[in-house]
Image (tube, rainbow, N blue to C red; front, side, top):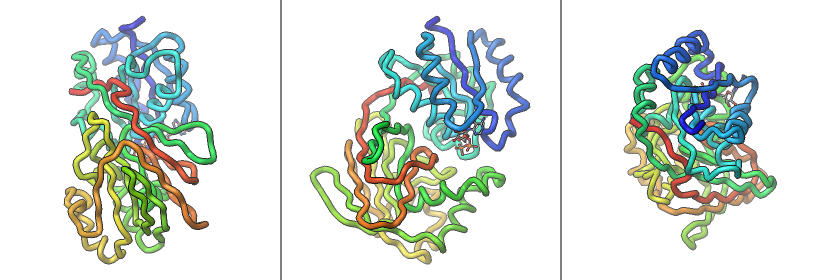
Length: 304
Ligand SMILES: Nc1ncnc2c1ncn2[C@@H]1O[C@H](COP(=O)(O)OP(=O)(O)OP(=O)(O)O)[C@@H](O)[C@H]1O
């Protein structure tokens, strides 16, 4: 059983464009002598339960076929079970989503034939995982890429209607959202510091890319036991618009309105009644005060 893989496929990822290629993908796995069982997700977050069930059946190797949301759900399935140590689980990703931001940090190719070769080579790294504890719910949410509160969460909330534009959807969602978005005041606590900030957005990052290829974290290292915190202060819409290309080439982090820190734990408290927008790995989350801690080297990921 230990060399067998469990393949979790989201047919709706990337607006369902990959759906017709699923038989070819399964054939390619067979041709490469990868022994597997597979399951296709039937509803939102189904991948969480599928991953948990696969582990309870004895699987320790999982392939997530989908976008960042599917990967996020699989990671949550792995992290929320207690049958095996999460670091005993090997997770490979075949990216067929819209943004596919996590794979960009590892240069994991989008062509599945190349990707399957990488799986057969079996090179893996242990990556840190973030754990979000919300004030009003007992169940934590885990993330493998970037979580945030503010404009990023606002865009993720709006993005559904723009997904038809593929990789441009995040950019279109951002530009069209600038005018309506209102930053809200937050109490931010980490490294024995505590301050109140009206923040355009505050990001807690393990990896580099979010929002369909934007680089908003300064120098994240997914293995060093620390989050990269990016606080974009209350920057004006005009100023941000002027610096739009800097969001993609990563130089935005040097802007005078952007601060960067490292920590392994951060607490964020909402200080008025405004509705917060919170996201993790591009998935919309609950809206209450929260604390994030880092779980070091939590899962083995298959990488080139
Ligand atoms: N059968 C299904 N029907 C409807 N939604 C589903 C189904 N299976 C999974 N989902 C949901 O689809 C959402 C989006 O999936 P995913 O993120 O993989 O694709 P994407 O949005 O195209 O890519 P990316 O996040 O990389 O931009 C996830 O939140 C997941 O819960």
